[in-house]
Structures are given as structure tokens and as C-alpha cells.
Length: 195
Ligand SMILES: [Mg+2]
Ligand SMILES: [Zn+2]
Image (cartoon, rainbow, N blue to C red; front, top):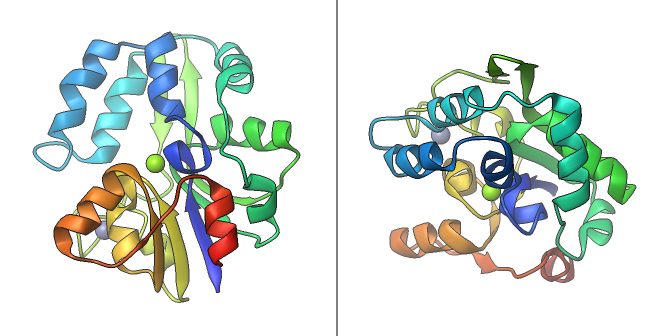
């Protein structure tokens, strides 16, 4: 079955968007906006506002990301299953980490234009999802059964449409609350062992 995996906090040990905001952006804005997602902001609106506060050149941020963003053990073994990476983040910050790891995967993600007056996000899909009401990962995955691997808010709706779910962190808490079955994972080796 097709395997679909989130990037930040799932493939990576920590959320690389949050790391980049702490290093180059405005962490106070993150603290203010994050609790409002799903209340009066969509995830896309949050991301657009947080990255508009970043003015560093893309090359500088990419170099920092290559040096600091860690991936979970088991990525190479998972790559043998040819998973699709689906991310609310950016091709520009995901692909250099995959290249560093020597792994080539299909990536569904957004793009950024890093201007000196703030980064502008170009979202892959801005269609509001019929199920959750905001642009989400579910629409891009429709049509074929899949296994979903994720950790956070951006994974909720797509995980509920999956045939099998591997979850950790706030996605696991969310599924617990809904009484939806999933398999808990620590690193990506756990997922590979169970597949
Ligand atoms: Mg995540
Ligand atoms: Zn949705």
C-alpha cells in the first residue's frame, strides 16, 4: 500500500519550521498565532504570517537547516517503501535535507519566495477541504488507499482517511480523543518494522 509520511516532527526529530522561526523569525509571533489555528486562523494563514516575518536570504536559511535539522533513525529503511512526503512546509527546506541524507523521495509541499521584505509562501493547494473546512493534506491523497505516518495538526484530516495510521505526539493525542485506532511510533524504524 502507498505510504505517506509527514515531514516536520515525523521524519525530522524537531519541527524544522519552528526551528527556522526561532533562528530567523519572530518566536513571539509563533507563540501568539499557533494556539489560534483551528480557532480563527487556518494553518496556511499561520504559516504565511510567520514566514512573512523572515527576511534572511534563502541560501543562509538552507545552510542552517542542512547543519541543524536532524532526521529520525530509519529514514533509509523507510525510503525502500518509496513513501510520499507530504508537508505544510517548503520544498526549498525539505529537499536539501533529503539530499544530505542521500535519499530521493516524492515530495508534496509548498514553495516560498524569499524576498528581503519577508518570505512569501505559495501554497500547493488552497482548496478548502470538504471534511475539515480548511486547505489540508487529505485532498492531495484522494483516490488510492494509503498508510499515513504523522505527528501533528496538519496530519489530522489526512490520517482519518487512511487505511492505517502511525502516530506520535499531538496527532496521537488527537486520535486518542476521537477513539480512532493507530499504531504509535518512536522512530521511523518502528514504522518499517510494522509495515
Ligand atoms: Mg508534523
Ligand atoms: Zn481536511
